Image (tube, rainbow, N blue to C red; front, side, top):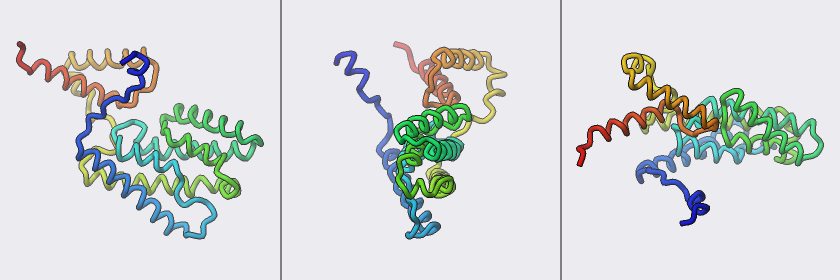
Length: 230
């Protein structure tokens, strides 16, 4: 395979069939319950969409990649809140839809990064606020609480309950008390400092929590040391 094609080859996921089915079931329940509850809350006669398309992308993150920093509750709620506010504002004050769409996504990304709530589907939320049509434009800032925040809150609630039953750690925050463990282990402290230095040098977003990455490296090194040498 040529180097060019190699760069485009998808990376292996290393997921079991059970985990794949769990993610699919979670998305089924998440989107289904979100649509049902929002329909019940808003009614079928609502002029605005009861379920916006970006929720499908959010479901992929929440149920198929719950350990991702992009899938955490603040990323979902904060990202969609910021993006919807920015999108509605751009739609209201920028007359050209193409310019408004570009500015909305750009500003939304900048604010999400600044507020540490980066959530890729939120870029689509900003676009929906600009390009969603007359009903969404007529709703104005009312588009923010419903359907955006209502959809987000219900989907998050389903994810929290689902992961509690499936015994996945979600929200996937930092590992408990890592500082104490490093304080008594110079090797662990050196690994942590080296890992942080490498991440700083790369200066790009890596879609894995730094504590998870450190735990993976530590477990890998431990396995190498425990395996018998030829």
